[in-house]
Amino acid sequence: MMINGDMDYITGEWIGNGQGCPRTNHKKHRQPNAKKGVTNWLERQGITDKQEQTAIMRSYVKNSTPHSDKKSMCVVISCNWHDFLKWFKQYKQSNP
Image (cartoon, rainbow, N blue to C red; front, top):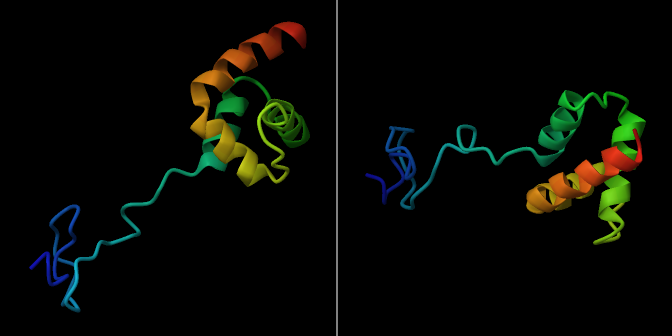
């Protein structure tokens, strides 16, 4: 039933008559939202101003790649999360 697509190949739950190939219910298996995760983390650090958040992201990302839109910057930050945390700690010490 999973091979036919009647059941979700990740969870095994019934999702309806299949069409001959494995499938999943994409609504239940969303990828993490990098932009939301990074901005929420910055807000928990007390940085609620959106322009300040963008400036921090741009400051970090300019050291590695030339991404300019917020979504791309957040993906870069998420992929290098531990490096970003170290960088942010130094950033906060030099910009109180």
